Length: 115
Length: 113
Image (tube, chains in turn purple, blue):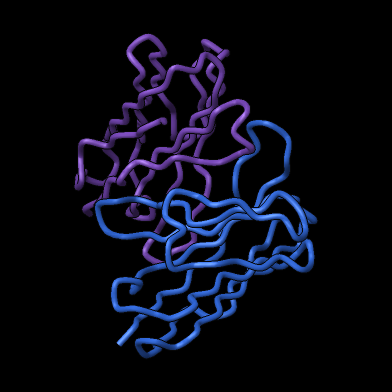
């Protein structure tokens, strides 16, 4: 079974600065997908970024980018130019290629952006 | 945009009651999922369904059942609610194509007294 670990339960960052959230996972599969989801205080979980394991290029979405290290089984999220609206719980999630789109989630990191 | 709607945002029930949590999606997705979210534990999968009348157990199915009579609707049932089922419940849906993300509802915060 896959496991996903987020080692930072809470983090804070000053507005306009950069912050990196860590995620490691354990799997014996070679093809899979990785996701970062954001859950603001209003609670709806929304997709931030998606990475396909067979693509070496790191995914980026505007101010959000990932550092995907397949050999190390690491998938960190970098948020540049942090904004107050980035305050949220962030969840890292793993999806096996033939897993029927089931997700395995990490425990989450609570990020506070300070003015 | 995909819309996943959960029937209640807050719900308070008593121990022993039968509780129904409803979820409806409007994107004709085959896959639907129910999770519970607890601090420090992330989201844990309770049940999922790949099609109408199909259901599969997730990681923590004990004390729960589900129903999927129509493609757009996936119901979670607590047969006899207990205090340890107090939690946030999240519903999600996705297309069946590999790697497609799940889309989530707003969640239902359920308290069992």
